[in-house]
Image 1 (spheres, rainbow, N blue to C red):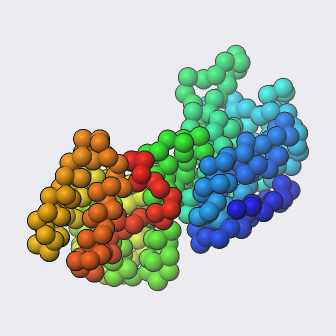
Image 2: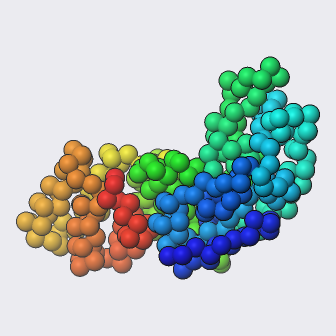
Length: 332
């Protein structure tokens, strides 16, 4: 698939692809020559795999600030909890206020995003471990986030955000994409027509996704919905969404996946033949022991769920949390 070139002078630009989910991305990762040296940091993972499923919306905050291409490098200095942005070759030239004036108005236009992929180590876009320099020229022991990322996370604290480099880790990539799709489903299915019934339906369909990450939080969120007071739907929505996204923020363990697979198997044990039951249990055990990937028992379970399962179990997002073409469960 060919990416549509995007303008580096606009505050935001859209790379339109066949797919409903919009994800923000640091412009240099799409191959746009917007880095300080006039180069880019083209990510083949993003443009060849993820672009088949996401509409990427690219943005370079440094270009939006009007700093030009090429330009002197920038660095964070001062207090890691409130760093300032300056030029590396002339730290008297602070651009913090100018940067924020360019970035802040963009935030409103990002409300329809379901995720964001950032350039690592960048003083503007880095997600974590960004160096903050002290007056003596040495990096502070405490690291920070880039200024754009700080603004993004302050405005959209539950938005799935990840650095491109970390997406080369199979488990981190799967978890990020799971969160992007969950965020999208919530925004479309719940926020599209907010009601207690919609929240409960979402919780029902994401039961086993939640259980794979935290059984405790699954039960706790269920109680939150059951004890909801009339007329508090907006507050309830915010509480549920924040806690749900936090619960799935880290990859699920193999042990928890096995527990979920066995729960789903429980819906089938009376409807499938004994030989098939043994095969399913054997595959779950082999997955537990690391002999096969998650896709192997999952595919067999999904087959029998489609044949014999109820509407309830067939509707579980755990069985298909994202497009199978991504091949993510093959690597878990």
